[in-house]
Image 1 (cartoon, rainbow, N blue to C red):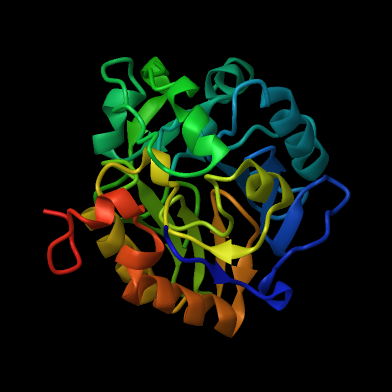
Image 2: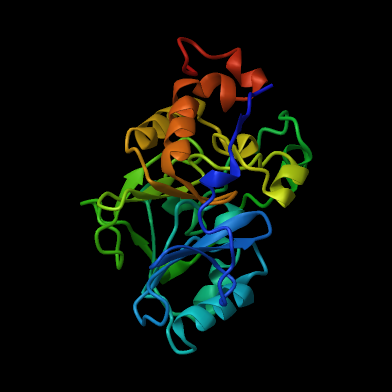
Amino acid sequence: MALQIELDQSAVIGADHDQAGTHPVADDLAYLRLAIVNVIYFGQEGASDWVLVDAGIPGTEQQIISVAERRFGPDSPPSAIILTHGHFDHVGALEGLLRHWDVPVYAHPLEHPFLDGQESYPPPDAFNKGLMARLSPLFPRSPIDIGDHLNTLPADGTVPKMPGWRWLHTPGHTPGHVSLWQPTRRQLIAGDAFITTGQESVYESATQQLEMHGPPQYFTPDWAEAGRSVRTLAKLEPELAITGHGRAIGGPLLRSTLHHLAGHFETIAVPAHAQGRMVNGELP
C-alpha cells in the first residue's frame, strides 16, 4: 500500500470562500471546488480579460458560469480556456460552456485525440484500493469533440491570455498533461501531476483530507513519466500550488512534502501491484 504524506493545515492557502464562492489564493487567482475536482479562475475580480483553467465534472457548467459572472461580471466571457488534460472530471462541463461562451480552448497536442473525438483513454487500473478506484471502470473514457474551438498550446511555452505564465509538459497521468507555472511569483497550477488529497478514497475526496499524493492511481498509466514530472515540479521550488484535487497549499511545507514525494515517488505514489514491476525506481 502506498504511503501517505500528511500535511498540516498551516499549509492551506485560500481556506475561506469569497463572495463569488471561490477560494482566492492571490489577487488574480482563485479556485472553485466542484464535488471531486477544482477549476481555476485567473484574472482580477471585475476584469474583462480572464481565463478559465479546466472545466469540471459533467453538469457543472451553470455553476462555473454563475461564479464567473459574480467574479467578472455578466457580460465577460473568458478570453480562453486552458486544459491541463482531458479526463472527464476536467472537461465534463466544457461542451456546455462552449455553447454559452464561444471562446478558444488550448491543450497540449498529445491531448488533442481525446478532445476531438478520435481516441478514448485507456481503461482504468481498478486494482487499486479505495471505493473511487473500484468505481473507476464506470467513469467516462470516451473522447469529447470540441471541434473548431480546440487549439494547440504555443510551442514557445507561453500560455495564451496569461501573461508571465509558462506551460510545462508533465506527462504520466495522461500523455499530454500540462502544468502551468508563474516563475516570478513561483505559483503552480499542477493539474493532476500531484494532488493534495487521497482521490482513491470517497471519504478523503469528500472531506478534502490534506495529504500530498501522486496523480490519481486508477487513471495513471505511465508511472515512470509521472515520477519524472513530479521531480520536475519539485525542482521549481513553488511558493503556491493549486492541484486538480484537494486544497491549494503553499510555503515551506509545500516544498518539503513535494520534495519528499519526488524522492520517494515509487513507494508513496505508485500502487503496490505496480511497484513490483519497477526497475531502479522506474517502470520499464
